[in-house]
Length: 538
Image (cartoon, rainbow, N blue to C red; front, side, top):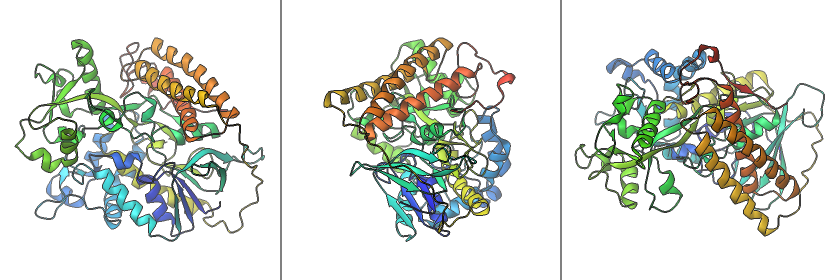
């Protein structure tokens, strides 16, 4: 299977790139499930951008957005990346509107702009509370109409193929990927000298997460195994407000996100006594950056012994939630909760991976021809804590920048690529049914130990415990992987173990508390650690 561009992932980052790249050659987009099953589709709040009209009429400006981003990033943002990405906000919105996204507007036809934690101005464009789904749907429909783009669903990337892996003595370059066709069970070779990772994050490495089931750190793990540099994986953002209802059944009930935009529109976090406890931790209260709010909730739950805290919107006018946040309102009703009559029970949950495959401002990784954009990448935009709604912005902008760099530095047509002998995939033996139980057991164990030892509040002792057990699990998974026919389940488990180890490794190296990495052993910032944590497999 050969194409000029190979894109792994079908969220805003991958599809935006594919649409632009199709002007220059053939594009193959592979995704392990259905194209709509991405973190993008689950995003509720919106996309941040400073629009020209907002600058004129509301006093917002690029400098203010940059300052808010740097403030949330706690000293680790790369200012050149922040500036470059935020300055292209207007173009990003134009791209999405051209693709068919219809952002909410006011009666005067201006865009309706929301406000979220950490933002000093209203600058969040949205489509009610299903912004990500609307964006993902529009991009998929646009991509499917383009002749140069082939979207292959249920194709799971197993491993990247590089010249170093093939033993070719040259600069380490990407040459393609092994891909499991989940329908046939066959592993195919996809040949391309320009591979784009856009696989999203790793929320499923934790027991509680707002992410879809597909978020198993696949791109991150593949890049690490290929020898790419990985950066800042200790910074996993926990969203403060995940719906808490232990009696509700199903994955959606356990991972349903109550958007930060609800707090931006006046929702207040309270404890069981009705007290607004967050102001004890930050004067901004419920609208403080996510790391502060998540720790405040964690502290309140541990202090009081409660199972959750509450997000109160009962003071808003009747019908407000149904109009502004119809999906949240209806979903909560489906689970038996009327948020207009009683506060919403919420707890923090793993939400966003701020670290990832290290890239420069043009999305280049340390392997020639391999690019990474979106949540899987670490560009320097988010630093030690992501500012709300900057992620969709980053995915779209970096898609443009990646393509621009490819066109300038790499041949974008592969009519006569250098012939490389890539060995066919060697399949193992089918696993006995009783051994399939090991996969589900190890999956559960990884997620629980990561939640218990490597979540919102950490210690050296907890991290050491996690590292020891993960090493044992990695050995078990490796033996199973090499000894049996691969399936999507074993591939996800293999990637989860690798991702968990990367998070623990990075967290162990950072002997301070900064942003969303908080450890009781080193509760203060330390300027000695004012740099990225980088790891690489040799």
